[in-house]
Length: 259
Image (cartoon, rainbow, N blue to C red; front, top):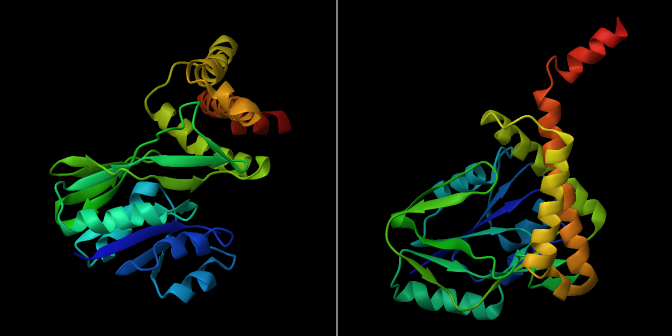
């Protein structure tokens, strides 16, 4: 059985080499790139992948584009900041030779600010990423993509590694990008009007949920920081919902002020 790996990239020059090294013996590597402006593609070309550039509108769409290029029996989906340790890659090669399932999920170990985090809701962080191509249909969902496939789902023993935001600036850049999309999705579903007490409630709940209920405090300072960042992310989402709910719109209000 042959294995293809589909990798999503965007200005990933600092992480793409490590990602590609971890799966370099795959039968086929396909990169779907969101028009990187750094050296991502020049570094990737050293591994002789298939490269397709497409403007990112959502992770599902990017992964589905990659699926159309797959010529192997099995496909593994990755992001450029993820790594497949040797134990996991060997397990993948073993299960696809004599598969018992149509798809497999694996645990993902997340690193924040250089530290592996196993609390706060970040472990085991199951990810369904390995599929028998003939049984796989597509990914759906604008932000948190969900795979659709026929057949049964199995579990792999070894874990995937994810190098999430490595510093505050990188984390904020990701937050601003994806919280905007999340806010738009909430507004589409006619989210209730945002008030100060609703804002305070969701931020406090998010922090307490991760730090106390999910025991992020066991990860020390990083656990506290990440719980606080997730609470701030809730603020970003709900503030942008509030902005979108304004009638007249903020743009119209400023035009009126100019007059």
